[in-house]
Structure formats: C-alpha cells, structure tokens
Image (cartoon, rainbow, N blue to C red):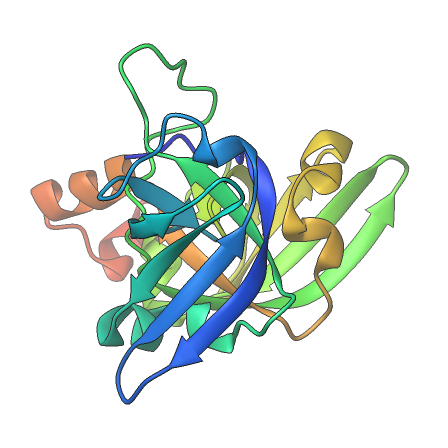
Length: 205
C-alpha cells in the first residue's frame, strides 16, 4: 500500500518492449534508499515490483494486465514519472490509503490557472462516476488528491502549488491520459451496501 504522497520524479532511462510485457529502467535517487529486489514502488500510481537496482536506477517488469489497464505502455525513453515507496508502519499517512491498483484511465480535459492554484478537469469512464465523491479522495498517477466537483463524466480537482511543482502534473497537457484509482473506502462502501448509480441519484448525489 501507498499514501499517494509522491516522493520524487524519476526518468525512464530505458525500456524494452516484448510481446505482452515491458521492462522499464527508471533513473531516480530518493526511492532507492532502503529499497531492495522484490520491494514495491508505485510508478505513476501503479504498484510495481523491483526486479533489479543499482546506485542510480531500478527496473520493473510491466505485465500484460498493467499495460492494458494503465498508461505505462504509453511511456517513452525520457518520460517523467511519479514514484513512491510502499507504506511502512513508521511512515505518516499524509494522503490516503492507495493500493496501487489502477481501475482505469482518464483523460485531461482542461487545465485552468486561477491565482496560485490549478484546476484540473479529467474525463473519467462513466462506470466510475459512482465512485467519485465531492471532497472525497482519489489517486491520479499516484497522487493523493481531493475531488472538488463531480460531473456526469468528469471530475475537477484543485491542484495546490506544492503538488504542481513536485509531481508530473506540471507536464500535463490537454488530451493526456492519466491513471485513476478511486478511494478504497468508497469502493468498499458501495460493494457492502450494493449501491448503484440509480440509488445514489435518488439520494441526491
């Protein structure tokens, strides 16, 4: 598990594409500390297992399912990615509980600057709408964020300057695809209560 607080941005140093998988070599610094082979590191929010590492980089094997459900297959040499080591018991949860299990991809629709803040609007798969709660949590490319508004097929998020400056958000352009992981608490509640979009609408959501 992760917190959604990105520790650093890494650079895709090399990649090898295979028939149904891909090897990524990621140049970084901070997340290498105390990391070892077999440990989990979130790459743009996708939980990946370290297969090799040295003093300046680590590699992961991206399997077919991750390539199908996430944006990792769109990465190129030189791409910048968000990185976070797995949560430990002595680490504060500054964001929210993030599993690193991407449910689907969204697409950047608008980026509107207002003073020091950036309002990011992302188009989401319609089946995810029931998992989006105003002022609730969401992970986008591994970033723990708060949903400001929910529309029929999109959400708006207020990005503070610190998040903008310390993540790949500053590289976003309209049309870019992003990884989305809804809040596990919302997913669990909906499953437990057998909620449907129709039921939520009847309650005024």
